[in-house]
Image (cartoon, rainbow, N blue to C red; front, side):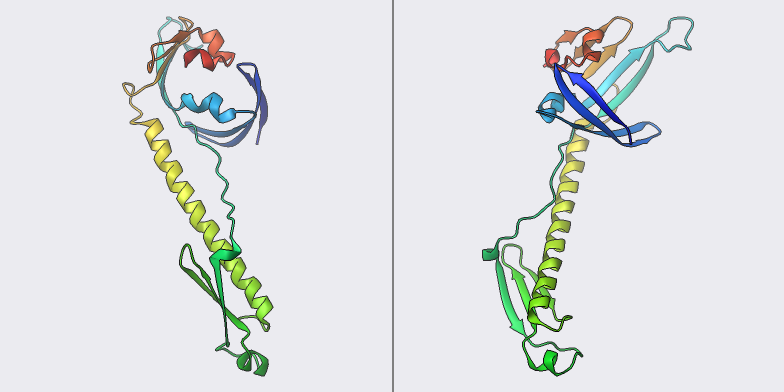
Length: 201
């Protein structure tokens, strides 16, 4: 994991490398209004430059697809008013205390209809804690899956087809120009490298 500080339009941002493989890189950006600064960078970008190994001055064109996604918190807030508790007797082994007293619990989460039964512990209090923990885990899993699906849809919408014709931007290094095809605005490649992204909006 690498840690870098960059300056974009006069603001400081921290960058942490999350994943890097052949043709793919993922990193997180944190700082004041980070998403607002980078939200317009998602899409296809055509990058034209002369590689150092090119001796005849010929352009090499590459297509880069960028997705800008927000970080989502998967923690869940469970309201006590959304819970319905019922005490019941355990149906399993565990001695007279378990079988003769209402030590098991049946927990219902009313907004989702999730039902959790806990009878493993010897006391109702312990079974309540166990059921609550299972409910929280289930809600977090559902929230995580929902967020994951939404991010996938968002990513596909931003990246598009990945073809050169499906682009939001062209970077021409030798001509020192970056063009935003969404509004026709242009800035110098030097300013683009300095993080003057607001000039393209």
